[in-house]
Image 1 (cartoon, rainbow, N blue to C red):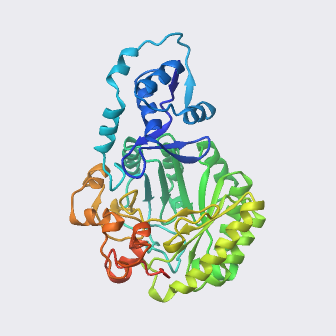
Image 2: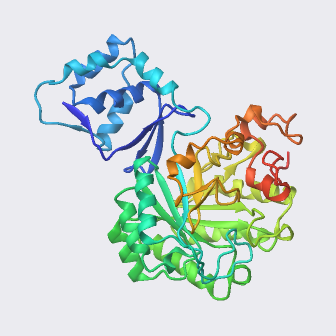
Image 3: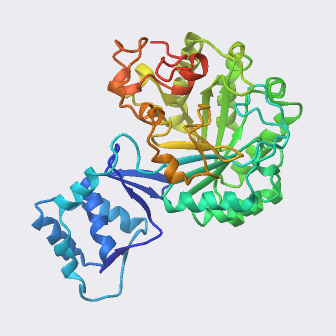
Length: 441
């Protein structure tokens, strides 16, 4: 008899995929077919023999998803039980593929039924004063969420089957209870992680993180020493680089992220090569500046400059895909969507369709860079905020081909890119579909 483990994380959806699974062994999402989703729906009911499962699919005129089943056995989320005979065959009579498809079709088709990813700024307190900080972080502020409130948010995320929570700030390690928060989250969320400036990371904190079971981290690095310290503060370059070394040496899934501004754009390709060639980081990625918080229009690079950097980084992505344990990650935007580039994924803005952001006082936004408040977790549950009916929410979830944009309406990229990053439009002109300000098409 075969059964699947209750600790296996999966969700039935009608937006993009019929089934979305998180495989902890492979540390990745697997999007699956309706037949694969139907197999898990059956196995929710009871344990069954292989022959019974195959017979059920044959009776429904379906191909049995053999490779999916074998993947489950390989990665231990489908296990073999001790029973010798099927005991609950009658429950199979109550399950049909048509009924299952009807169930799927009743789910939302413009967004995930609950958030897939949550960015959670658990403090606004920071020991740096980065010139481009999207949260204007610094001194500790009133109304900061308590430990109990934060644990309550984690409980809600667990109940909604949120796969990925990234804790940020401010600097999250400046909360004295941060390790307690991480420990709690590690028992509730498949992929809890954090973003740090690296200033507090040492051998002791590395040991604590390993004991908790955290294995994925992100460190911010915005250039070589002179540039990074000018952007983020004196001596932080050494701290950030030391943190990267410690995480990589201790086999953490280490991501390094750079925010692209005029101050650092010329040295980003060299920085990328330096990190990939000298440290066993998992991914190097960069993101364009969004003009929010302390960031200003004067810091922002133009579309052509960004495209030139983009092309250089893509060349490095191909180069290091052949002979490196690290990957160089780009978000394939605009006319690059659909290209086969190592380590990269098509970028489509998923603000309040796949993700949401919660700030230090509980305010909820579509994403960390889009400062349009939708609710507050002290007044409503996350589920209530996610399912709120409003003109703004409807606009955020408008299908790409129906988005009205004077700049993008005649562009062949619109059905794929959906006018690009909504924050990069809104933060300059207060219009969601005004067109991504970095677009070079």
